[in-house]
Amino acid sequence: MVSGETPYFTGVNLIDPDGPASRRSDGFTERRENWLKVQPMQGLHLTADLQQCGCDARWLLDAEALCGACTEAVRAAGLQAVNQLFHSFPASPLGPGGVTAVVLLAESHLCVHTWPEQRGVTLDVYVCNFGGDHSARAQALMDALIALFQPAHASRHQLHRGQVE
Picture 1 (spheres, rainbow, N blue to C red):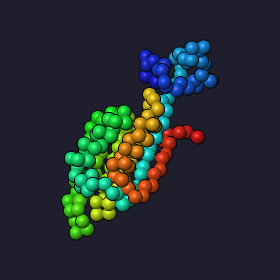
Picture 2 (cartoon, one colour):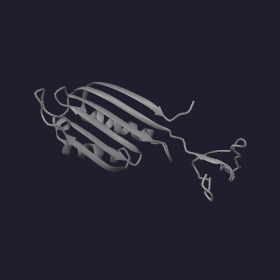
Picture 3 (cartoon, rainbow, N blue to C red):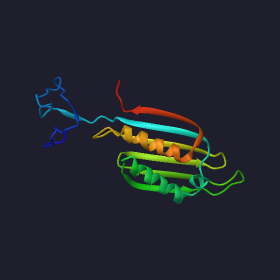
């Protein structure tokens, strides 16, 4: 620990190298100078593979349209976009080019990859649960995007990240 650094922060797990944490009656942990601060790296990582998407082709082909839909879905889910990058790929002999979209969130990220020639999409939503549980917001964002693409088949997965066993 850096000299003069205060190891007491609300919402941070404190580890006393000399023994267990001491809780006060108001729920706060007592401050001790020799405690180490450890912030849990807990988060929720959601993925979905969408096949036979029945949506309008613009959601698979048009980076600008997809950008608007993604940023609106992020806002509606109660998450905060801090930056974004949308890239259109050129057409190939296999068909039209798709789009890769990344929205950097204050809570983590959203990634979308489209394969218009297969009418397929992969989605990736990750939220860190630093300072609060954003899991319901991540689920709402994923649900909104799946509804946008209207897949005939969706394979969804979730991974709870950062849990120490």
